[in-house]
Image 1 (cartoon, rainbow, N blue to C red):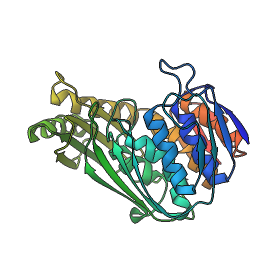
Image 2: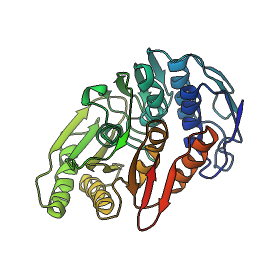
Image 3: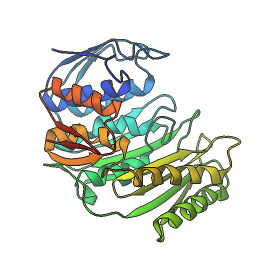
Image 4: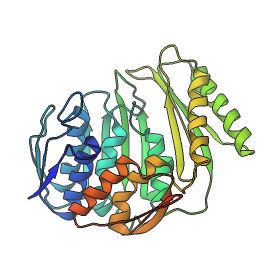
Length: 325
């Protein structure tokens, strides 16, 4: 059984999610100890437990210690299957992070995952970022991974529902092509339509001025258990998002997403700094290459974790950071 120190480097949920995904894909039993030891609330959270359950569903895995607050977890993978998995985080915890753990395993045999929780929450990519930035970077056909946002869910009430359908893929080789298509998706739940519209109008005005071209805009509004809003902007393999909150003008939400994306676009590298670590599990398994502006702590953590599973990658640091396998 492979022993993994859950407090090493980034020392957060990334180690848990990626470890169980790699365990399932490689068929290697693991034990994670000292989980999130240096966090304000150490141990597993509801979202981490949900991610582990999603991976276990896809590979008929056996878990011990997968409960909120646990500081150790053992995971014994079984045979990967094409399964339909229904997971409720139980809180407004991040749906996208649950999908991130499940996706590398689901690509092997295909499957369906329906998750209830938060579609856009702090310290997490939005579900729109996964769809518009992560998936295209994997070179998977458009029909290979489809997202259906049944209902948006925001902190603290949650209640969002996302259904993801994945077809088996022989390769998710990371190749960043020259397509620099851009877009803005502005969303809300339980708020007047003009909130999402104002977010989008401010984002498109700022981003369009910098890029010198028209930017396609999507407005999505739903009714659910929660009230909240978000704005996600992207160009090619770079994206950014911002979340609304009480007292923050809708225009500022859109401007924040656009400003963050502009910062990424004016930086070196083919992918944004968040995507740089999200792609590493696919790079190690399927090959490819890409560059980023910096070698982040999350990317360093993934480099270390992949090496434990015998999946080395190459990193070359210079004016930009080059990743290859």
